Image (cartoon, rainbow, N blue to C red):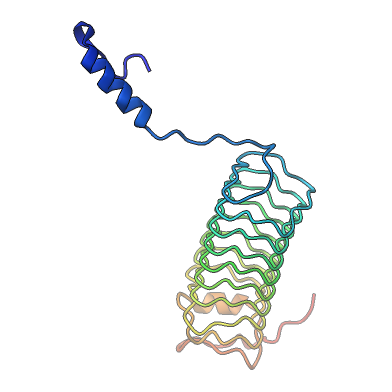
Length: 236
């Protein structure tokens, strides 16, 4: 702390004032990887691979940069948890409560979020290729600039979700539910499955995206956009 509060002429009162200021400053909690699972636990940058953590209360936990590869987090509480840049490859979060959780820049290839409540969650710039969001609640979730190739959103609640500038190539949106608009501005939709999906309220869609996607006669599009005459897509 030397030099932060210089004391001139050895003033006792100045020294006391300086000490009071320094001791009142907030001290950031450091990670302790040995701590047991619990609310607000700090596992930042910790290695937590292949663990059975299902059913735990991890609300508000700090797991930024943590390695959670293949870890079982099913039916856990993760509301407000920070998983920024976490590694979640093949991790299982099925049936969990994760409202407002932060997955920004997280790597979740083949991770599973089946039936998870992810309302308002942040997946900006995340890598979620082949992730399974079947029947998940993703109302108001943000996926801007995310890699979502072959991700599964079948039956998911996507009300108000944002996919702008993301990659949804070969992702499956069949059966997805939404009444409020989804933002698809510049979303890459090569062979994205939108069979039977009502996209009439979607925003940001352009004809080139529709021409790349895979729909059918039941797909509903915003005004001014036309189905691809080659629909339905043939299996490859």
